[in-house]
Length: 431
Image 1 (cartoon, rainbow, N blue to C red):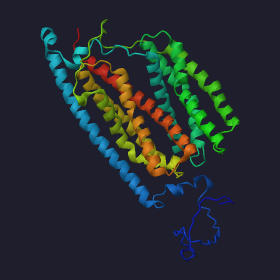
Image 2 (image 1 turned 180 degrees about the vertical axis):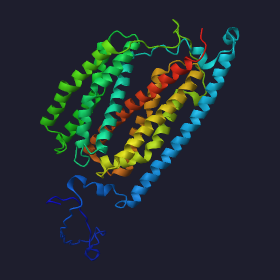
Image 3 (image 1 turned 45 degrees about the vertical axis):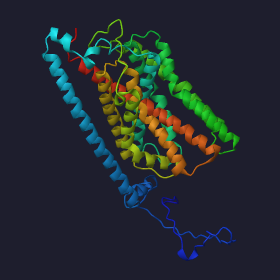
Image 4 (image 1 turned 135 degrees about the vertical axis):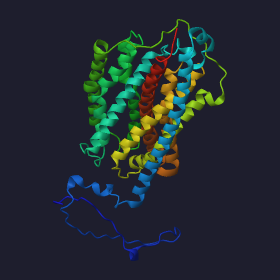
């Protein structure tokens, strides 16, 4: 179309095929090719990738893709409904029992999550690190939604090599103020004083691991003489973006949170001066390790099929054009993770364990660890990659992706859990 190639069809002649399976017998192979050009005015250059997104072009894989997504959605819907019904029935019974008792009976009968109302809003250890993690997770969620939206509207060329990664870097820099605002506001609500330290932690929490992995991967690429090593000009551009855009916006977000955001946590119950002792004997199915496994496995099972296609696109050099389904899968992942986190949080509070801040964040982020574990399976059984160079690139960048999912899902699970805790403790009678 106007001297531009918009599509290519490759065919072979069956009569020209040569058997080369016998490695012990020398075989002479003559290579030849012929090219035939056809003019196509109906397919413009900008819309050339729509041919690959058409279900008639890839009928088998496309149908399997849709059926897998629908199957995952139905399973997640049933799981969410099941957890919601059970949780609401249990809470309804708890509310009825607590609200119908008088004050004397309440002191004798209260147990479970109601008993720790004076400790549940006790702020977590390492508040600077916790707030920075929550704020960075929110920032990555916003940047991901913007990236998928731009890909859906074709404002970012999804076919040009490196365009999505470049767009993600720019979006991360532009959304730094959001992450800093969220983290600093939460830190002030925890009665924190060293808000500058919180801002600096937020500015370095995600870029620092990325820089370490990049330096290692780029060094390995240079040692092997690979063309995949980034030149100094590109490295300087990325560093300039962080120094001139990302870091100043992070500082601006922290200052805005300090001056304009509400510093009141608005806890519905008062926190006692002495922390309540936490029971040490719990069943194995209520242990922290079992909760971490469940909270990571269930959301991972909802995105397993879509994850296979993403891995094939990232590391298998296949074309990925279904960003609408990818956006749907990402929203589905956040919803499922949040529901699972809330359900597990209730069981934790019911056993009178008030240390829910970090546990909720880690439980919700465990899907990132499952994604990294799946990367090992894909590397050894699907990718066909080997060697120091490919292993460094693959496991290095997959660790960054998994860490990003850990922060995003941990932040989403924490915010939903915080709303849940505030809601249930605002509905009961407390001394």
